[in-house]
Length: 88
Image 1 (spheres, rainbow, N blue to C red):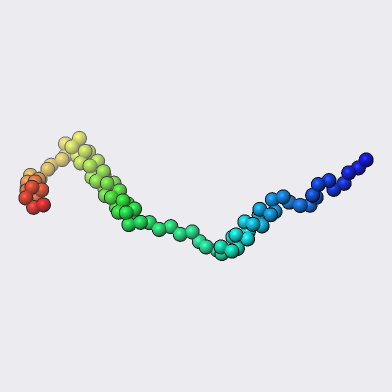
Image 2 (cartoon, rainbow, N blue to C red; image 1 turned 135 degrees about the horizontal axis):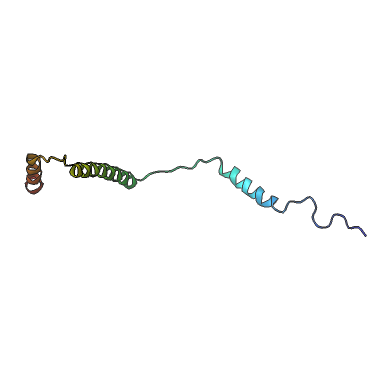
């Protein structure tokens, strides 16, 4: 005995799901994704950039101290201390 065409032959059970997805895509149109960076995030980027620059400067100063080539300027130090305490 031979049984032919048992069950739904030629029917893709996932086709309905794919048709629904395609219909949603067509109805939504070709909208592009859009990313906006908040002002707080932009400020954080600037802060991180400043931190990186400070770290480079600190590393340079460490190397100068280790090599014995660091020569601080006493007038600049005094000026900085004065501005810190009296000219906030």
